[in-house]
Image (cartoon, rainbow, N blue to C red; front, side, top):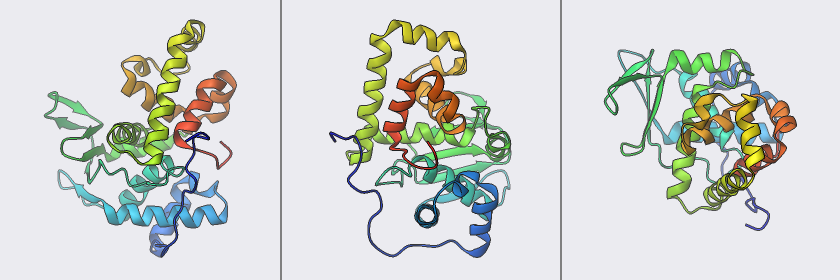
Length: 241
């Protein structure tokens, strides 16, 4: 806890593998995977295979769930939790996939993505999930955004070391912004983080994680203290971050 990182991330045991086609999807359609070293790639593949096995994927409006959906959605979750010891995001048990925007009964509006903690469900528009990866440096990624919400809420409920580090680091970040008015004003004036980030603390954390993943160099150059706290939250010490 003093160093804000778990003593170890990967336990001993049988390493799960993906099928040949699933592994091909991971290598060809998920660029983050190719930034990892060989040993890290083996752990990443194991975690993706484990995440797929742990979750129930459900297609809506006649959409058939494919390996591409399972692999890319799971890889997004695994990427964000790759610095965690427990990567399953226990809050989420079911992942619903719609072909496009869907009507939400929560607020009577159409959504592209949604987390429903009461139902233990994460919901995506597949069209907009894919669009999040079309341009990898625009700081807009539906999958990252919604999984960031799930990790945030999960960290508030769980007491494992990674959840505790995530929560403590986010508290340190909010204290930093509360105490340093000039930093807060510069953050808003820069327009580097889209305006939606300042809706509430939940959207703020989701947007900064999107930004951290997609444009890390610019993030680090513009706001090094915030970058460092985000990196600490995720224990993200790989792939050049």
